[in-house]
Image (tube, rainbow, N blue to C red):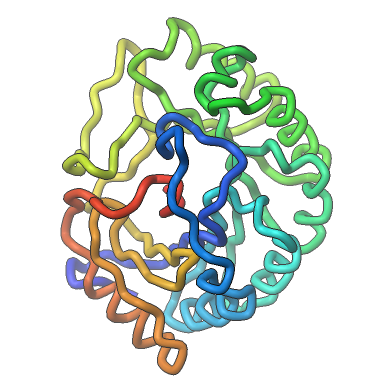
Length: 271
């Protein structure tokens, strides 16, 4: 379906939880965020109902996000439920990969089609610093397990202002020799004004975030609210008596361009 600016909105990003096992420096504060109570998080059945309604309105792609989606107990079951929704042509997930190794084969078998894995450094100490305690070996094991399961993998690399010289190049080389895709993401801060252009260093071209004029996304948060724009506070609560109407209202509320989000961190909205 099209929004008020004529953009075709066909991509639903679904945050299945606000919980994460890491505390990445660009994602949330060191002390974490106030977490939702269990009873305030959408059930798998409710998520599936929203996805089914979205598919009926022309949405064709769903991406599961968090927090960390693999921190949600039984996530493979949700993947199986969504894989059965008619009209959804692409079912993907974005994950930090550290919990992926034991789940990759089951996720693939249940219908997951691809994974984006966050990986910002191949240096163990720097990875631990960026993630505030994460283990690089766990992320690499997740990547290997996804490849072994037959899941296409794309690396999400956030280029930070203090990234050491050669870090991006090392990640590109790793992706090439490992048969992985890679996209470079400019660090953005939700509480600052949205920018469509980011200045990188010599030879650095950012793949994300997308420009507002080409945005095709709607976000379903774990608490049952729809967010038309990552960089904004507009929120539409899903009315489960009229899910299609809720989605339509959220799409039509999508602004021409983003401004700033004052009430959530990146980790709570799924990026």
